[in-house]
Amino acid sequence: MELSVNIDHVATLREARGGTEPEPIQAALLAEQAGASGIVCHLREDRRHINERDVRLLRELVQTQLNLEMAATEEMVRFACELLPDIVTLVPERRQERTTEGGLNLVEQRELLRGVIGRLQEREIRVSVFVEPDLEQLETAADLGADIVELHTGFYANATTPEAVQRELERLLNAAEFASALGLHVAAGHGLNYHNIVPLCRIRAIRDVSIGHAIVARAVFVGFEAAVRQMLELIRYGRTLPPLTLS
Ligand code: PXP
Image (cartoon, rainbow, N blue to C red; front, side, top):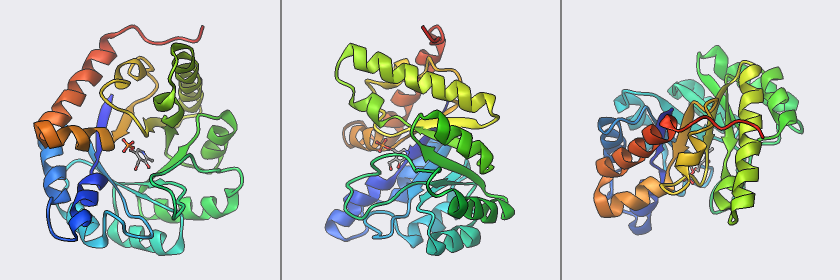
C-alpha cells in the first residue's frame, strides 16, 4: 500500500501568521525523502492554506506524484489543465466547512463531471473521485471513466465502538472490492491516523492512502521525516496481517 502525504496543514500553520513559515514545499520534499509515494494538496476556493504559488513550486519540485485536490469548477479545471499535476482528485467543497465533509455525489452531477473528467484526461491527467463507499457512486465513477476512486474513510475514523468500527471496515472492504472489480484503482483517505491505519491495511484492494492532518500533527513533535516514516512502518506492518474478508 502506498502513502501519499497531504501537506495542506503545513500551509495552515503558515497562514496563521500570514508569513512564510513553515514552508509546505519543504514538508513535501522531506515526505518524499522519508518514502512517501506522492504529495497531495488541496487548492481551495478561499485559498485558506495552499495557494497557486505553492502548487506551481510543488509541480516543479515533486519527484513522485503530485495529486491536486480541487472542486470541479471552471477556474480549477483551467488551472489544472495548465499546471498538469499527475493526478487530480475531485472533491466537494463548501466554504463554511472546516475540512472536506463527505464524498462527491457523482449521481447528481453526472453530466458536469463527465465533461470535467474528459477535459482533464485529454491533458493526460489521471482523475480520482472522492466518494462514499457506496456501490451506486462507484458504478457511476466507472461509467464516467474515472481512473481512481478515493473512498471516504471519515465514518470509519469517527466510529467509536468496536461494532461500528467493524461495520465501517466491512463497508469499505465491500466497496473497495467492488470498485476494483470494475477496473478502478482504489485509494482511501480522510481522518486516517496512527491509531486506525493498521486495520485498514487488511483491505488489500485499497492500494493507496492519503493522509494529512495526523502526519502534520505528529511532525510538530518528532519532525516531518520521522512522522512519515512512522506511518509507513504501520502500513507495512498492517499489510503483513491476514487480509480482511467479508463475514
Ligand atoms: N483525502 C481527501 C479527498 C481530503 O479532502 C483530505 C483532507 O484534505 C484527505 C484525504 C486527508 O485527510 P486528513 O487530513 O484527515 O488526513
